[in-house]
Image (cartoon, rainbow, N blue to C red; front, side, top):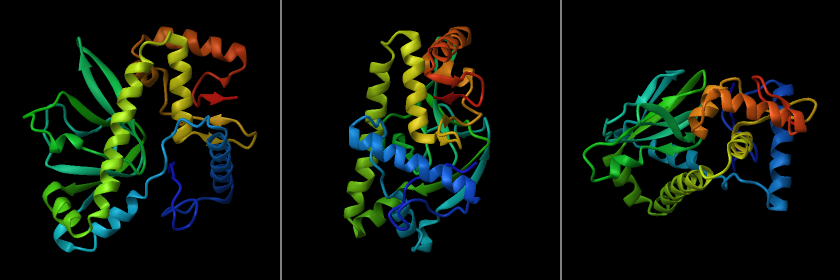
Length: 253
């Protein structure tokens, strides 16, 4: 499944052709998000035309941007590995994975059209997180940091775009720290709402369906709780009618 994001060039979606029925789903999702934005209830940050920066960089053959497909559960950047590249998600979903007290947790999700690899600019010699693919596949472009900076000097307006991306990354992490103080069921509910904003698919019946790779295991790692607590919370949310279906694909009413 391709998770497509709004694009200025064609007003809705770019690069990938979809069956008519799938396109209708995405159009419905677009207008749902527009409605939520107007009401001030949307939690998703504003769209950034990151593809324009990629296209600009690819004009110069010296940039040597490389595109690679990663399989589910593979690490794009290993834990402790200090990369000299910045990365861009063409398609798919990944996560920032950290190790704490012997347990693996997810501190953030990385979606289509996102940049990641901000630590390449850090003065720290190493880091303590990895980037792992959670969708069936992920198509990733790697950008050499040196050539990226040289190109930005030629087009200074792209600095603002890059800094906007970094600011949004920080905001996601700040939101995550606030999120951890919530009761378990509220954390689960907020996580599902957040994921549906980014990668939810509108069904024919006009419900929001999450991809099948959003499992109880993924939710437990992100919400920092056990899978059994996740299961109980999903059951309660289904009983209240907020969830239509608690098993994958998890479906919001």
